[in-house]
Length: 208
Image (cartoon, rainbow, N blue to C red; front, side):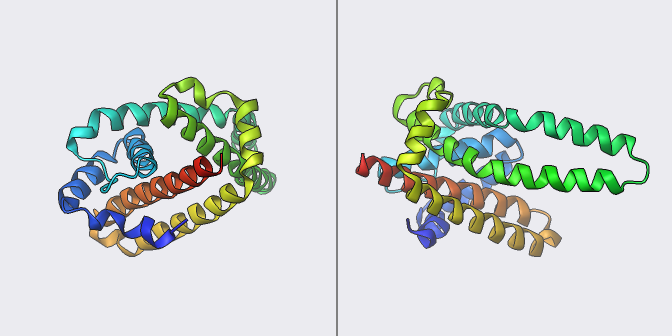
């Protein structure tokens, strides 16, 4: 996987200023940013010269975003009871000490769970791109077998995704005074993640 390529690819598109402005503005809607991520991944897998979607692709971007967001919510279902308990304890604990401890434990659990959940999501996304069917996201047993078979590529991908998130957090904080800076950075981070997912999916496809 080429990390630098994933960061700089939007600016190699001749229409990048227009695409960047439109994408950043539409990213106010959470599922739209997810749609851009999925569309970029698909375009990378299909080896398109300019993976960044244009205005003519917005319908597909929105559809992809809805499907991907629903899938991610489903993957997070096992965490919901723990989050609910943490919220209840936080509301009942006047001193805050025990609630803080529980909150820290839930945060650690969520981070640990997010790693395999992200791997499942990538494999589900790989199948969804190939089939166009939402059911590809929820065949958990089959997806997990694919995860274990492609563990090396997925671990590398997760490391890169964390790196993108850290870079985005730093850049977004530095540009917060500009108001629009964090929004642009968030959009660029999403499409960079999509590019990395597309690269990983391509390598998985070649290895199959």
